[in-house]
Structure formats: structure tokens, C-alpha cells
Image (tube, rainbow, N blue to C red; front, top):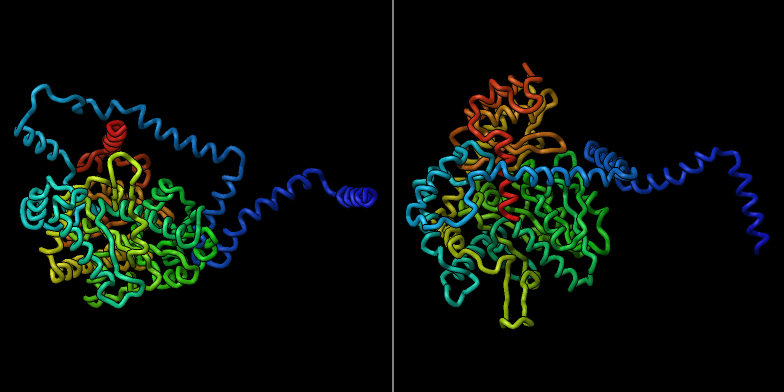
Length: 537
């Protein structure tokens, strides 16, 4: 045996003696690199529509393989946080840091009014943010405020004391489910759920429930989930909180979830996949039916993020718009998140998480029996919750009704079409994909779209900056139904301004445009962020 090994070594040394030592060193490294990048290269060849995204992923993967690069990236992230924390005093000079010696009593209302007067004038100028139409002093705003004040002292944690809140929450959940598939014949049991503080908590609970459901059903103890690149960052938060491995997959050429690419990441540890209706960046509905088929094929969960679309898409479909399937009528869907505080026109801090059946939902609950305080059962992240918000959401849905939501949807869908068409007519701009709803993302191959966004900011418009590709979007609400012409006029003028003098905006706004700004400058915004970080430490 020893002789055979010696002969093999001699043969190998003779065969390799013709090669340079450097080549022998680089060959295994190149092979390792190719093996690491193979999934990305395969995706690039198989899906030419997502070439930019795949190429970016390949470049980033190569860079991260270089010794020291990953550490450098993490150090740079740390520098940003350190800079914010080191500059904290600049944002807190006039903040109240101790209790007043004598309480202000009712005089505090004047202080509240004064501080509120310094907020940005948001009416009709912000992307999303405020979804209710009209003024804060009348109409729907007043109704919600009154409903909240009536139940501001209540807490859903104590249902035996506040049965009214228990009923309101149950009815909000049932009414929401009724527009998202419970009226239809859906297999798997009765649709159920809970109210939450917002879309992030709804998503967090859906991920937690899916993780524990898959552990009980399939014994998965090293959970993984797969999401499109366009899925909300709440999934990253959920993955970090719940110790779940997260895979982000590039979208296809239409900015939709790439189902074939997602399938390649499915393995024995996969607990769930995700679709959005629509996705926050581009306002485009993912192919939920295809994702549902994939979930059924591999016996895993499918969560649909309807935080934006839950109170628009069902009514848009009734109005005749070509809306693809997106709710529990798709058999593979196991959970849905939908925000009442967006197009449901409810108070901020109200959302709903829904499940196809009680078997999945029961994994959302936390029950504690071992501590000395007795049995503790909680369905949500928070223990105590503001009952006033539950009452406000119920009041909003009951006051608007189906006819009201149809009317609101018609208005915002019409203004969405108007603004889409207007953007396409501005030389140098293009709309990304084919928006299904009220979010319109647009970019440019001729001007720096972020500089355009800067100039728009100087005119009081608050839009969202996007990446991959560089673009900005506007999320249209009832506040925008009367400002379409103003928006398009300003946008066209801002594009021309950047085209004519692009160097004037290298590090922010040129003085001529910044002089009439209606929003805090970047330094002020940074100070506010710094102060907020410090105040919450």
C-alpha cells in the first residue's frame, strides 16, 4: 500500500512540475470562488431580465470573499452609528430632560400646539404618511380622534374589564378578513387573526407563527425564509429577532418576485416564502398564485404583505381594474398582513395579521405558567395595548363602509393614472414596471434622479428614495387627489433644473433652490435622528 502511494505521489509531482507554483496556488482559489458564485451565475444565465441585480450580487459576493472587506464594511457601518451618537448634543440643546418643578397643568396644551407648529406642512406633499383626506380639524380626523379619546383609558389585555374593546377588535379582524377571502370558499378552516400596532408587528407575528408552526409540523429547528429583494425590511427585523436565516432573491425584469429563483433556495429548513401586494418600492403585485403553488408543492408557509394594498386591491377589483389574485382565495396563502392605518383610513398604529386557520394562529400566542404571577397569555408583541386605537380603527371602518372605500379607491386610482401618464411625458424620466396600484416609482438614464429628489424636497415634496435601480417613488393617498397638476409641474421643472446645471447639486441643494425650502435641511434631519437615538437609549 505504501509503495502504491509513493508511486502515485511521484506521478503527481511529475505531472504538476510543468505548471507555475503561482498557478497551482490560484487554481483551487478560483475553483472555490466559482463554486461560491455558481448559484448567482446560474440565476444570471437563466434569468436575463434581472441581469443588473444578479451582476450586482456577483460583484458584492466577490468583494466579500477578499480578506478584510467584510470587516471593512462592518467598520464603516459602525462609524455611521458612532458619528450619530458622538454628535448627540447638537440635537438636544432645548429638549426637556428633567421633570418641571411645578406641573404645567392644562397649560401644556399651548406647548403642544407650539411644538406641532414646527412640524412639516405635510398636506398633499408627502409620499404616503397621511392617508386620510381633508383637514385635521374636521371630518374623518375628528371622528377618529373622538373615538380614541372615548377609549383612551382602556387596555385589551384586560378583556374582562373592557369587553367593548374585545368586540371592536374581533369585528375589525372579521371585517378585514371578509374583504380578503373569507367570503369565498377557502380551504383549511376559518380565517382568524389579531390587531397589531402596525405592519412591522403584523409581519413579525406572522413570521413567528410560521416558524413555530413549521417546527411543530415538520420538525424544523434551523429555520430559513426566502423573500424577494423588493420585500419590506420588516422581514430583516423579524429574521434578526427570531434567529431565522434570511435569503433575499433578486426580482425579475418586471420587478416582481422571481418564483423560479425563489424555488432554488428552498431546502429542508425552509419555513416560508413571501410575496407582496403590492411591493413597497414599485407598487407592483407579486405573482401570488405562482408563489402559492410553490408553497403547496413544498408544504411550507406563504405570507402575503398586503399592508399597502389590503384596503385598495379588493375595491379596485370591484371597480373593474385588472387586479391579479392576492388573498386567501389563493390556496397556498397561510397568512396576510394588512394595515388599517393606511388606506383603511384608521388611526396610526393599527394593523391586522390574519391566518388561514386557528392551527397556524395558535403559534402566535405566548403562554407563561411558571412565574409567580399566575397564568399569562398574550397574542401580540405588546402586553398592554391602547384600546383607543382599536376603537379608532373600528370607528373608521364602520363610518367609511364599503361604498366609502370604493369611492376613495376610485379617486386615488384615477390620480395614480394621471401621474403615471404625466411622468412618462417628462423627457428624461421613465416609470419602473407597470404599477398595479397607487405607488409609482420612476427613474432616469439622463439625470441623477437623487438630485431631482433634492430639488423636489426644496419645494416641499417628500418622496422616497430607492435603489437597485436608483429611483424615487410617490405613494398616493387621498391627500394627493387635488395636487396632481402641481406635482407634475414641479417635477418637470426640477428635472430641467438638474439637466441644465447638474454640478450645482453635487452635495445637496444649490443656494438658489435651498433658499425657499419648506422642509428641514439635511443637518436638521440628522440632528433629529441623533436626538431620537439618544433619547431612547
